[in-house]
Image (cartoon, rainbow, N blue to C red; front, side):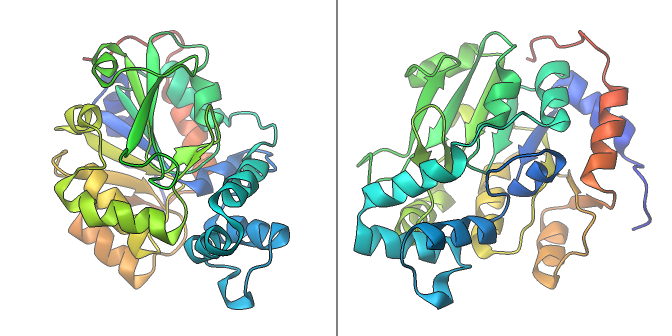
Length: 285
């Protein structure tokens, strides 16, 4: 695909109207100066620097996490993850533009930082739902939280203008992390029938388009999670993906009818910021 943003007008309009759902991945952190890990491999290496992990697992995030959980205890894993994402970081311009200038009924973020929460802090009437580990919350898949971090009832989410969905958990406010092999085994066993996905998320995705930002689909887990979150949404989507996709990624993009936009994320962010009209945020239906 030639460089350019042929679909920018549709994306900006969709964001303004609330028909596009931003979906952030770890690569979106490349736009800011942050000390938190910005990739699965980097996070795995951080874990290995904090606890003894076999050499062959040091770049495999879920396996390294499982090893620590098995041999050092789950509390050690949670402590290491908290250390990794406790660093002070400022929300990137892209997150601020989307959170503060567009009326998004839902934002999905599949990394463990809290930058999107910080970007949403100036908004009113929003809340979040985070995936949780069965190892720490037996029998539970997720927890709803108000903007101030207090626990919310599931049915309260229907009244929020924006729902932030963090399916893998987040450092804030409770340090919930879905990260080990066993965490994902629990989820993948049930995700095909949608059990781990909150009803509020299912309701808000219906008929809407997804915009993937800073996401790669290199692993089977990445692809399964994205596919199941997109289920029963619209028939087409977009991904800002400047790097050459792998064969598996190309197959996934084709299967899910995701249009690849071959521009650097920073360039896309600048164009989107220019397209956004200040003070245009309004509740989305």
